[in-house]
Image (cartoon, rainbow, N blue to C red; front, top):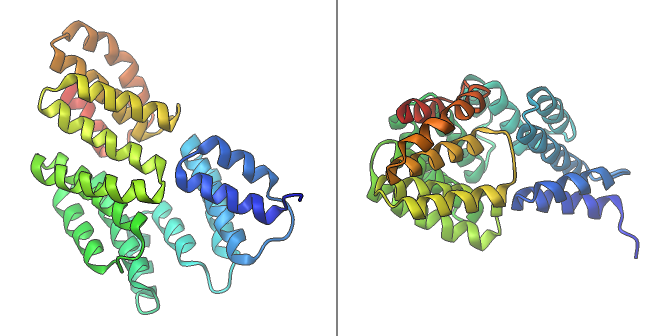
Length: 273
């Protein structure tokens, strides 16, 4: 039979969770008509995430506000996403206001977002503390959330130069996320495995993992994409091709410059120089 707006809304949600950006965008345009309030909120979150991937920060904000307004009381995921857009201060305020009514997974998600905010500020110690607390708080039923937290702990360990710890978290993350079909997040885990490979001077594995992750994610102008491009340059350096790195630097500086607020990205480029 004919597929209605609810079917397309659910399909858009699935595609965004799986990281299939083009499919999510196409389904979003077909999700017309009246929807249940929670599904309408979820659809606005999908639209917000797609706007974020395009680099449209204001568009992302508009959709996040609509997601919060779509249900009464507000959907926890929507409140968390809007607070995260506003910054760690807003996240802390929301956590204090809502913590009594939140489930373990919602508390864990708030701690995860605070950990990522600390990581973006370059504070690995604070990030690891928040992320470990998130693992302890999570119910264990949401495998995607567990996988993402382990992935973030792996990234934090890499930046703290704890290779063995990073490898353990990334292995757990990849296993959990593959079970959930979360293609986009699996690509990020593999990108971090590429970093570890480069640290071991295994430039072939680094290059192969990074290119595979880039091809799967698509050509997005976001911090994760430019971290991958910096990693490809590091692979050339590990290979001993300094001339290739010099040739890549102007393009890297231009692309990374568009994400100047991302401390990890800026530090990675600075280390390459």
